[in-house]
Length: 321
Ligand SMILES: C[S@@+](CC[C@H](N)C(=O)[O-])C[C@H]1O[C@@H](n2cnc3c(N)ncnc32)[C@H](O)[C@@H]1O
Image (tube, rainbow, N blue to C red; front, side, top):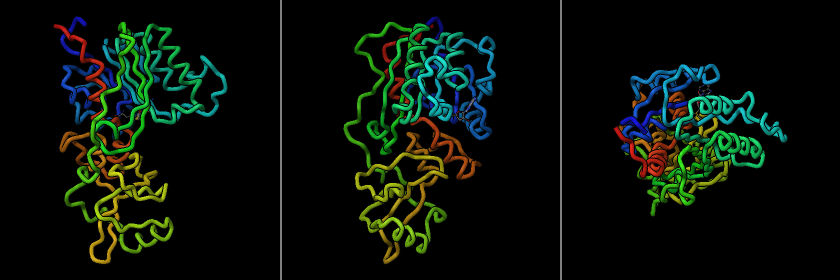
């Protein structure tokens, strides 16, 4: 590269998981722009990464009007991948947001592209879309790696499986992978919980009794644990289930009884962000409601994992002046 810093374009930006990940990795970079349409995501992004211009709806971006960049990142929404994937081949991505990723990358030819999606994207239902993505990037000159990674293997006790798609124009050593080395030990969820959780997070005894009756779960625990309401199970492995948007959320924290009283609560906002790889005060979400902040956290990148992936990608690459 003939410039001193990696230039990032952050699409489907959310809170800027790639931006936070790059910062954490210590790689010198500058954000030349981002693309986001959600009011709260734009607000949190601009507050935490000031100075970066929002190019808005990706479907309306004229690629010739955005500055050049080296790295395109995007956790693209999965909704556009409908079950209509019946051997549509090239047409598979037409009308989807992925089509706009390809359109922009075909024109700008960034040296690196890092995309992320939910685990369901690896299912047989989405095979033809996946194949189209890999084939299309390969056709325009990229080496492509598709990998499923779980947050729990990289130092954060959340079971969060996500698909990462890495594309590069570089010649790639056949043994190269963006997969970071796994942590030798996963820290316990207890270390990610608030010391004094806010009283408003707790369920009352009547609500708790209802949950016990409905789901037949034993909430008498020796230490704080994750209750997986969907699977009707208190996890005893010190790991929590995937953080999802508040209206889908099946996760509760069970704490040891106080006297005869069961203790059950939702996660705080700070706990959401800690479990997405953030350190204390690393992200400013002040003024956001519980719903808004937790929705952003649920849809974001695990910034701890993102930083490790970036270190893998850029460890051998000189950014010269
Ligand atoms: C899965 S989230 C990605 C979050 C992000 N990776 C992060 O770390 O926070 C997808 C984001 O894409 C945004 N989005 C959806 N449609 C879009 C469009 N047409 N143009 C730009 N952004 C869009 C959504 O508002 C949402 O914030």
